[in-house]
Length: 225
Image (tube, rainbow, N blue to C red; front, side, top):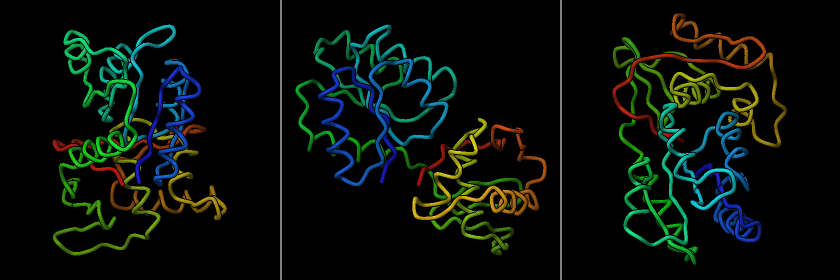
C-alpha cells in the first residue's frame, strides 16, 4: 500500500480523506498548511501527494514547484474547487500528475491514486556499477549471481535508493525496517549499513546524528515499495 501525504486546509475534509485512505490500507499523514507539509516531505518519503490548491500562505501549485525544483518527483494529485483551463494548465505546468475538482468522489480518487502509482513504475531493477538490485524481491546480484544480503539490508538499500541522493533520516529508516510490533535497534541498523558498505563503500555516507545517504547515477526513476 502507498504512503500518502494529504495537504488540505479544510479540517473536516482533511480528516475524511485520512479516514478513507487508511481504511483502504494506505499509510496517511496530513497537513493543514503548506509549511507543515514541506517539513513532512523532509522527514518522510511518500509515494503520492494529495495537495489542495487554495491554501493559507501559498497555494499548492507553488509548493509543488518548490519540491520539483529540489528534485522531488513524487506523484502529485491536485484537489481543488477551480475548474478553469488556466488553473488546469498551471497545475500540470508545475509538475502535477492529476487533477480532481471538488466535491471529490472518494472511489474515483482511489482509482486515480492507483493509476499514478502504476505510472510511477519504470523499472524493477537498478544498476549500481557491476551490481543490479531486484527491487521487487529486494535481492542484489553480481554477474547474475545473488550475493549475500539479509532481508532488512535489502529493504535498507531500497530506502536509500528512494532517497535519490538525499539524506534519509534514521527515524525514517526505522519506520520502514521495523514494524510497530518490533523494537527498532540502532545496533542492528549499523550491521545492515555495514552489509551494504561491503558492496558499495564509496556510495553510502553516514551523516552523523541525522541519517544515511546513498549517491549513485541512475537514468531510470525508481519504483517504491
